[in-house]
Length: 270
Image (cartoon, helix red, strand yellow):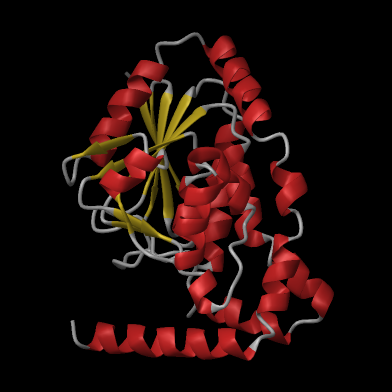
């Protein structure tokens, strides 16, 4: 079986083996946060694979010690957004939702392999995929609302589609960690495996999907998605403007400042 590899910038690497592509996102640091550059690279990877008719299944994974801690609030490029004219701020805020949409619109089956933690924007990316497999020690969390933000990147309808409105409120608004086991019970995750085995389990499932004829696989995925996601954009198209509005509040500034101070302190003591 032929294996081919491609590097997408600095942080994203694609390996193709037969009809399965594996996309690894690794920023070289345990938090594996989503910087602006990383989001562009992940979007480019999805756009590239979207053109590859020979690939039927795509596995997305992060680091073995953590999938992603979400948007990189320390990224200088993100910090500069507040100084831009409003129209340029709106344009800059497309990065996250464009990344998620690029993964969601892929015709191939997408499987996300998660170890240890998946937080904020990492969750938004993971639920843009078709299937999620977690190591048993993993947890998922959305800290945005407690930090004074809205949950954007068109994520709310995707969450509701997976777990229903009541559990979506519990998960999104409270910002509390959701264990892999509970996430599986709620329907946010499809399979929980021993720690360190999420990628192997995802590849095994990908191999099963790769046995299905390509055209009906793609058509059936598209049909199911159109049924489940018919109102997604209509109910979330304003969320980046809501994000920009929420960013004006002093509560958000205080919460993020406290969060970053705590993160710096934790880093220095480890």
